Length: 113
Image 1 (cartoon, rainbow, N blue to C red):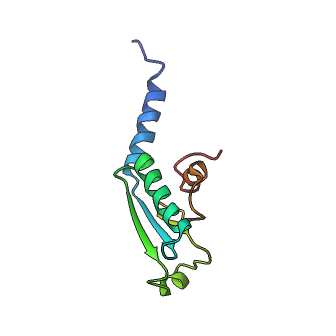
Image 2: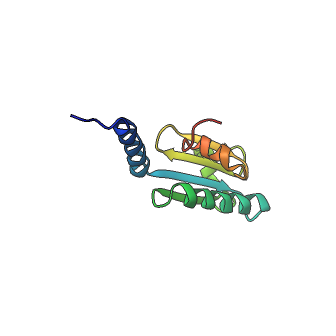
Image 3: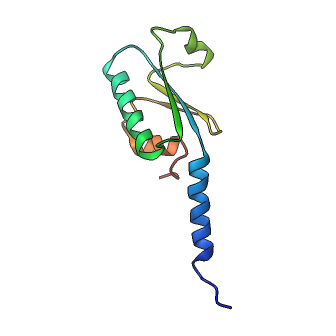
């Protein structure tokens, strides 16, 4: 009986793709008004999500000028702040999210650099 030496590697690759597809990312981006940093953070995270999580994420943008009470509940001390609620563990990324590689690592989408 002949065995395919690439079969274990192929199964592992298929499992990794299946795991990624089954994960639903729940993200919350906290901003403060219509500042340049806030606008950049929104644009950057939308681009990152569409390129890397297409169809498997939910993104909520929360303006703390309109809902300041939410800052204390989530312990927001700086804006923009992105919080990854799911999948666990919870992660926080502060800034305009312009460094795509660091955002992907922070969201556990890519292994550490």
